[in-house]
Structure formats: structure tokens, C-alpha cells
Image 1: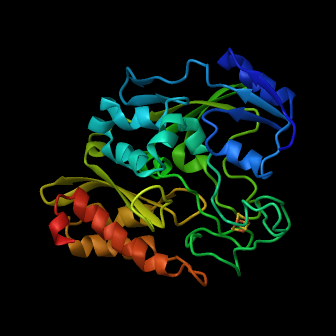
Image 2 (image 1 turned 60 degrees about the vertical axis):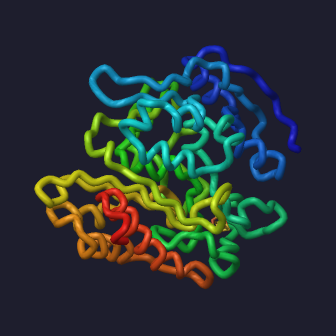
Length: 332
Ligand code: SF4
């Protein structure tokens, strides 16, 4: 492993300054992804700042409405919190669909946001072509093993997918990421937090290198209570999504008043489908509407040699998730 220095942060306010002062510094939280990447030689930070003792693990109601999840709240604690299970079941379900109990006990909310892709070529430093690992080196997955790769929003530079389940639910929930940098705090709407690859797949997010995530806020939203997470994967547990869907609906007088649809396993970022939502709002909550929403969501999808099956899988998953959340799984 590449040598690095280690220090333990004691004051959240001091961390951005430390990040600004020292290049090649990484924040250590649960370490469930970063330490693997360091052992494999994919990540080679010169400094690690351990933030695990900072007081940023609360899950609490926001006085003006909604819930604030501290950056260091463990995935298992978020999944089991009554504030989450009651008000945002899609988030609890997404977290419980991810990883294993041991990993969920260690992984943090901020770390989950910053997970890196599981593209095989990214994880193999002996492989020469990976623009995300070595900018300008090419993309081995384009013509290679691309079964787990993106069908939406990809570029010629990278077709990787974002691996998180939690983030798909947060995208559907209109979460807001709260960060602190040397110049102060800012709020990043969830859909602006993760990036599409474009010409620079080495950047996964819009977080600056000197910013610290301190919380994620969930809005006060009645529709979020009627929400559901569907994950389709190769085996029943401890596997990343081939396709996942976070869905929420509010129905009034037989017509859909509010709709949220986000997809996982299909793009470089959690994929919020506003095209699907437009088909849903104002329409009847029935199978024909759900199929129209699914077609709209995948209208611009593009498959590669081994992953074209995901297009139909994603459509069927959207219909099934919306059927479930509308209360009629038997009809799916
Ligand atoms: Fe690298 Fe992205 Fe291509 Fe995978 S898909 S090899 S992460 S550039």
C-alpha cells in the first residue's frame, strides 16, 4: 500500500481548512470503499483525516419540517430509525437492500454518497485503459465486459454506473446535501450532487476537494410516506443493482397528484426520471400509465454489447415499482 499519514479530526469546522491546505487528502469515515481502493492501489492519498469521532451522526427532525441525517450516521441506524421508516420507507428499504449487515453497521451516509463505481476496469490498476482512474487513458468497458454498465447518460469517455442504493432513494426524495468549505456552508440539491461522466469521468460529484459533507436533509413531504424501493440483482443479497427503482406516488380522486421516479444501476449518477414523472402526474394510476412512464424514462437509453437487456428490465421494474407503490402488486 502507498504510504500515507493519519490524523484524527476533533473539530468539524477545522476540516475544510485542513483539506484546503493539503492536496491529496482523503476523509476517512466508515472506510468500507476507500480502504479497499487504497489496498488495491486505485486510491493513493498522501493523508487520511479520520472524522469518525466528530459529532455528526444524529438523525433528527428539522424544526421547519423534514429530517436531517448527519454525515456520520451509519447506514444501519438510518435504515432502522423510526423517523425514516415512518416518513421515508423508500430510503429504509434502499439501505437494507444494500451491502451486508456488517457493512451497513460501518458505512456512513456521507461515505455512501461518495462511493465509487464498481466497474471492473476501474478496480484493476494493471489494466491500462480507464479514464476514471487515469484521465485520457481510454475506456476498457466500451468494447469490453459491460454487463453492469450504464444505459443512460453515458459518454464515450465512461459508461460506469453509480453503485449506491441509498442515493437512488435520496434522488427520488429531493434530498439536499449540506456541505461546509473554507468560505462557508452551501446546500447542494441532490440532482446536482453527482455528475454525468462527460469528458471528465474522474470527477464523480460536484463536491469541491476542500468541502466536508456534514448532513443530508430530507424534505417534509407527505407523498414520501407512500414510497417503495425495488432492486433487481443477480443474487438475493450482497449484490449491486442491475436495475433499481425508487418510486413515490400521491393519488387523489383516482388521479396521480405527485410522482417521483429514480433509477439505479443505469447511469453514472442516481437517475431521476422527470420524463417518467411528467407522464404520471395528472393521469390515472393504472398499468397503461405506468407503462407510458416506463417508455418515457428509457426513451433515450443506449445498450452496449452485454447490457442491452437492462433497457427492458428497467421498463418492467418501473411498472412493477409503481404498481407496488399504488397498492396493487398483484396486478403487476
Ligand atoms: Fe473506467 Fe468508466 Fe470505462 Fe469503467 S466505464 S473502464 S470506470 S472509464
